[in-house]
Image 1: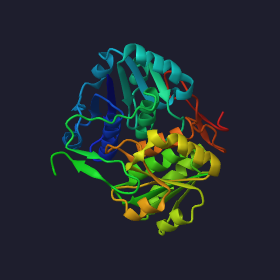
Image 2: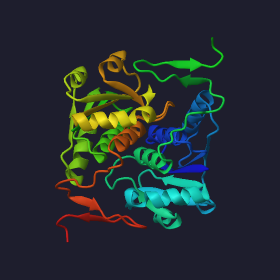
Image 3: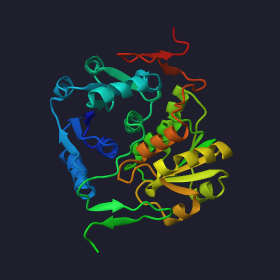
Image 4: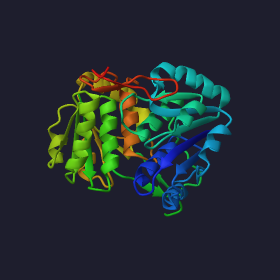
Length: 176
Length: 176
């Protein structure tokens, strides 16, 4: 089971970035995506709409008490931060731990992440030590820890893509 | 040489997403990042500021005539789109082509990408066929085609991160 916790969402300023975080987590197979910070029903709803059309069981919700989401999680807890230990030096060990516990919590922040987070996860991991994007860090981390397995089957999808050499092809279920 | 072309930037709406695209491209070693769509000097400047502090030679610029950036590029041209052919079925071949030409153009769009793009690149590739994030697609594609090599040394950096188990550590050059 994979859970992604997105900290520090700010209304307005972060809506698109947080939406990309959520949809990226879904594409790489997250079962639960939890948003903390300012409560933003529109942002959550727009993700739920996409999940309804494109299928799957990903749960998207808000948590005011986000510390509890970390504390009470039973499994491997990783915080992605540019200040953390290098992914390339840790990935083999992380893959082993993930395959042992099967439950993984990935925490990504917005601007400032409290020191408490650094101390209450199992490991702080950097996907590059330069300033870039929590979306990029999350995607590459999930891609690596699952060895490039990109989720393809989403149950009860109303729409899906037919991969194509040179055009946009989608199919709607039950629409012929 | 790696060049990233970001199409269809919209002022205001896309500034943070485009900034994440640019910084992600830089983290994974892009030499040139070209933005098309609406011209946005603030967005370009904020990236140049980061490059000045954090180092490296990444060139960031605007192009009004973006079709020329694709047409005149001499090397492998890949458009990342959720409608394209699956990365997992093509990555070994793409790695081979990249190692042959050494020059790679990666095109990522915002909302609607003209059909012209699909027809004028060498291949349209999907990093997952679900709606998610061009930032995630770009990061994973660059990570995979370079076999997980994350760029570490940026010349003339004023600041760098000291990877740490549990805190934020940065060093400023010449500040002791």
